[in-house]
Amino acid sequence: MLLYSKEALDLTFTDQGGVEPERIKAPTIKTFSPSRILSSVTTGDLLEGILTSLDAGAEIIVVNLQDVSFMDSTGLGALILAHKKVRKAGKRLVLCSVWGQTRMLLEHSGMANVFETYFDQEEFNRLVLNR
Image (cartoon, rainbow, N blue to C red; front, side, top):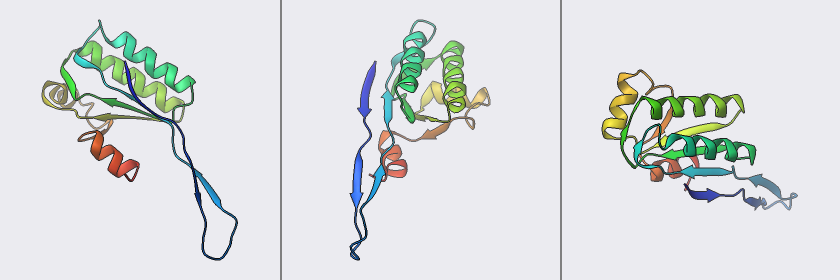
């Protein structure tokens, strides 16, 4: 289920005054892209993958819902549980491409403002990763 993995990069910057290089470490990002239906049948794998990524040191977990056409209350509950666990670990869980019925469920449940969301993966990359 893991679609994209961005391991941490070490970037080196120097100024023109000959000052010692500064190392900046990019965050470790794990992206999950469930497809079609996010329900009791599929949420176990998603939740397990997110928790495993946290244990492996992921700093930002991205759930790209682009290919999800339907999410039931179990799917929503799994996202809420993942959000709580990720925040408790001091990390970030973000959602991308929340459209259609999935967006409606988040809005009607009052959870739309709980999650950090981006229009799509491209917007996340541009705004969060400056790419």
